[in-house]
Length: 244
Length: 271
Image (tube, rainbow over all chains, first blue to last red; front, side, top):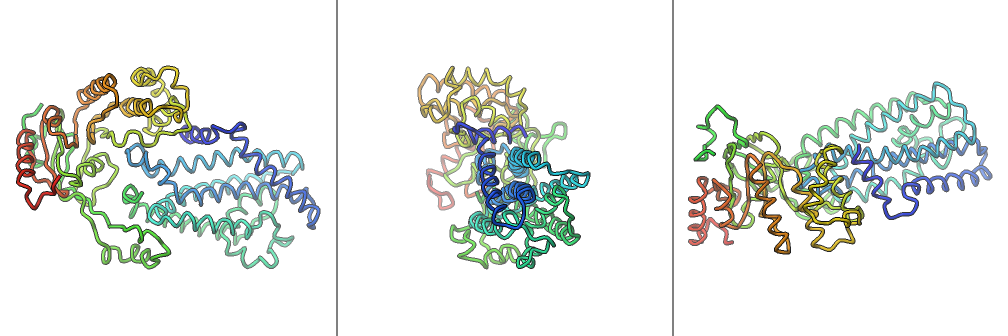
């Protein structure tokens, strides 16, 4: 954990504002897009801006796990080949760095909630459970994609391309409609894993219900992720130092 | 110090050897650059996952090596380029896992491989000490106690607060050596002797390395330098294409190696 923090701070070494950049980017995005959409859309900014803030920042965590994972072992090639760190430790440090970035950016969510005085009940705590599920999946996915990415270098590019599309296909900068079925996008939503993982973090904070199907998808995907990750780590983990 | 290197079978039961390797092998599926490309060979992934053993070509890097290293023994590995010396060291360090055979290592086996790898150019010298220390799994307190020694050794003085990309290559190397040698492992794995540019510092490095060798309980050294091996090691192993061709006292091993090289036998790659 100390190492993650150390690396996190080092990344912003030569910038004047340091890790504040992590806040400025999303904050500008939310402020501009929030006010724009509130004018053209059917929703009020009090509804849309908190939705956008949680969505965007949770998305950063999800896409951070996915896109970083494919290169996680290549980036730490030196410590792997010097025998300093094991695969598991390298993956955990990457996951920790992503969590640190998320916690840092979560300040924006807090600020937005204060500004719009979003009411929070006990139900909002379910969001923490959702976050825990997301993070556990992040660990598994980092091992899984990390090992596959060490073998197939194209994976990193593929994932980046997918995540860019997924950002638009997931209700972050648009709302799925009052009935929650997403209108024309409804069918896509059901098959969009990111939507379901996003929903278990976002919905409790906004006080909207989580569909039982979402829980089912999340649990099934988590189980698959865990099994695949366990299998790939056991079977191919030992080849990673040779591949990178 | 024991007089002879024992084979795993007749080792004495009183003390566990530091390293005990039985028939360890390392087979690696050969990956050509093109095959790494998922788009160029989509079938490859499927075959890798389901039919792995049937289609892939395996390269044998280490082939059935057995030896045991008791406390105080120092083993030198010698052989031509590509004989598997460095690979064997990495197997002993636990970086590569052997495909078959058993390997038991008592205590921490740490190597000094590619010492300047992994230094961060955007971090200061001091931060690099912390980074590497944390990577090695040391606590912050432990690192703090090690820092004076590292600073004294690297002779960087005030410059330790500067970013690494302002360092000269000599300064960088000094820091890299200082950091890499800050912890003393139980079993020292050396891939060639470490040397530095200027003569004065080189002497210091030599002293530090000798200190490391003396304090470690066992040493495995891979080298091409026969004189060095003779002065440091008690035992020698001659490697060829991942196989042990000779294992015994260092003098005999070196003699054997010299003869083999001179003869230029077909079984031995020319150095």
